[in-house]
Length: 230
Image (cartoon, rainbow, N blue to C red; front, side):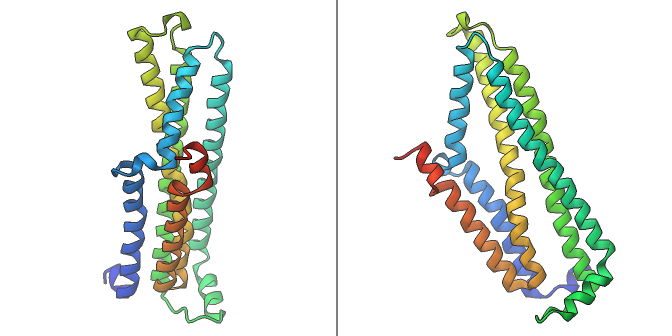
């Protein structure tokens, strides 16, 4: 029997909405014609400005320290992803006990072991995706620090060599930030995914709430207005 047949139609529709919200929002925030108004895109412009300021400095230790700080934050979330994956496997190992507890809750939550384990595996996939995004972002920040160290002396500002070095360092910094944002987005949507354990309606509601929060923070938040008040 196909595992999909174990799920109801509302469950499948809720799962489809979750995937559409997650990846559809990502495409909207990163590549739609409105992405230029997002907080992430505004910060990308600041990343480029930062690298240009770096090129004008004699000593660039402060810039490598900034990159190290970005790496430390990325490493924290990568290790957190591994802890979450470990917690997911613990849930799988305790499926029988968890189902017993669920049956005692004052909610109408009836689902089979196969459905429960499939939902947990879905959660594991989300955290695995986040781990790979954070891991790649960490590596890109490491490469960026090397490119900052390879910037020509400041007396070469305005030369094609300097402009090329600035572009490479800024582009790699932006790519690292994008992968970090995707990993962080996976963490956020995993909160909405937890609603599935309460049923398809709760899943749709929690996914929609998380989507609204993400959209607000990118396009309407105080942080976004602080970067670009216009």
